[in-house]
Each structure stands twice: as structure tokens, then as C-alpha cells.
Picture 1 (cartoon, helix red, strand yellow):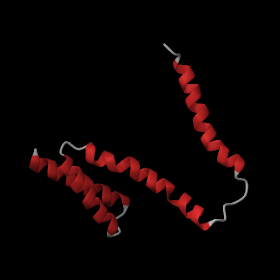
Picture 2 (spheres, one colour):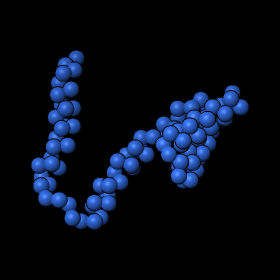
Picture 3 (cartoon, rainbow, N blue to C red):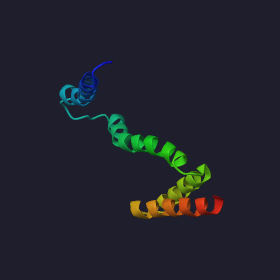
Picture 4 (cartoon, rainbow, N blue to C red):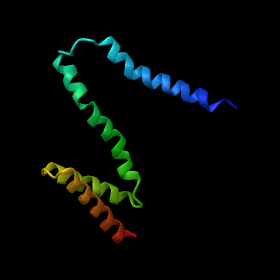
Length: 101
């Protein structure tokens, strides 16, 4: 059985190299507008990719997750802050699951 510390060492080397290489290779500021806008949206896209599947899979009734996603999207569209959107989503899941279970 392989040693767990070898796995941890390999994982840390890969993780830190991915973070360290751009810092060492790119010393000048990025002036390309397309690349700047791309890098600006990367955190939001990453969060969305991790969050959206979980919204649909974590509830007991998948329809509750879908309706919470739609209700939260509407609340965010109409300028709700993060707390308001979270409350709308939680309330939607609570109501839908109470009605369907």
C-alpha cells in the first residue's frame, strides 16, 4: 500500500506549481483587454460550476432545488443582496419540500 505522505507531497507540488508559475513567468501587467476580462470572470464561473450541480442534487426533491435556483436567480436579477437571495432559496426549498414530502 503506497504511503499517504507521497500522495500529499505530489498534490502539494502540483498545486503550488500551478499557482507559482504564473507569478514567476508573468512579471509585466497584462494589457490585453480580452485576457483581463477573462481573468476577471474566472472566479465567478468557477463558483457557478461548483454550485449549480449541488443546488439540484442536495435537496430531497430535485424539483425543490430547481425552483430554488429559479427563485434565487429572480431575486438576484431584481438586485437582492446575497443574504436576501439565500433566504429566498432556503424558503423555497422549505416550502416545496413541505408540500411534496
